[in-house]
Image (cartoon, rainbow, N blue to C red; front, side):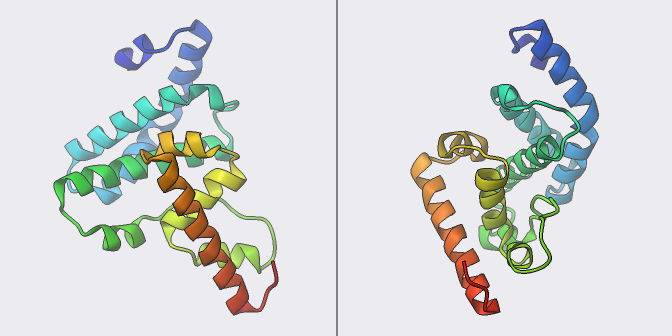
Length: 173
């Protein structure tokens, strides 16, 4: 943890990060370990995730809020997927469906909430980052390790998939 703290400028941010680290490190390791074949790989994913969290530290307001937990899980999953992709242990298409995604309870009693749960994990994550957590395309590109153009395309595909799912159910947008 000392390495991370040296990367942070102010004492207030260091104290905040330390509390965040202690709160979520075990959850993040668990998430990474679900996707990766070894503890060492999972530790690498968690390390990379904490580096991304430090870059986005200013976006956090509370440690124990659902958005912070979802962000930590999402970043960890994406870093674990990056490790898998780089090592080519699994085909990306199979992995995309294997990722659990963010488990955030969505408001409502059917319709949109039901359609969101049926989306592929990658699409659901993109929509939640943009419209539930309020991240800009630029911030999402940094979080997901993608170009802004790729994030925009992912969002477009995600919205189209959601639209098709709602039309299939007979709901109107």
